[in-house]
Length: 190
Ligand code: ADP
Ligand code: 5GP
Image (cartoon, rainbow, N blue to C red; front, side, top):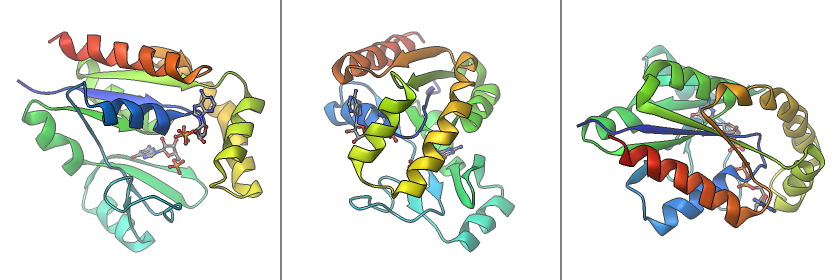
């Protein structure tokens, strides 16, 4: 029996990694994380092969021409991110469920390819100023990078109706519980 995909998208800084990390760390659900490839540099604390496969521009281009991606997007100017076939195809064929943290265009694209075998969840912030505040507190991006991310958030929010479910990340424990319940119900339904 093949596994399913869980697509999670949200504007950067909404708390997507925090929510996915919490659910994965507790390990109550049978889901594996799809490690994306990117040509951006690692942030402090990010580990190659765990958070992302950090690639050179050249290697990323090679993989595109080899057809190694299920999807890839230029999410920010010059910054590419993509889902590798090797991260999902074997696992799904072996019956494992796979969770993807990808941007809105990638999310819509994967949902289109996998149909009922994928469930998509959009995580929205309580407000754009709160999103900016979280990015500032996270401290991993400089002011220019934060502006790029906040400016893009309004665009990304226009995609939320394309998703199967929308969860607001206001109080973190509540958002985690909502996402976990959606995933648990979806994977239980064979
Ligand atoms: P994303 O993966 O969507 O870019 P992160 O998970 O890195 O976002 O979260 C951005 C920042 O906001 C982090 O510093 C995180 O600890 C914080 N955060 C996440 N959820 C909440 C919440 N509900 N309330 C306040 N801060 C939050
Ligand atoms: P960050 O640089 O904050 O880690 O991620 C920036 C954006 O890239 C986020 O919206 C994240 O979901 C998205 N992203 C990460 N991996 C992928 C991927 O494989 N494909 C696509 N399309 N977007 C991705």
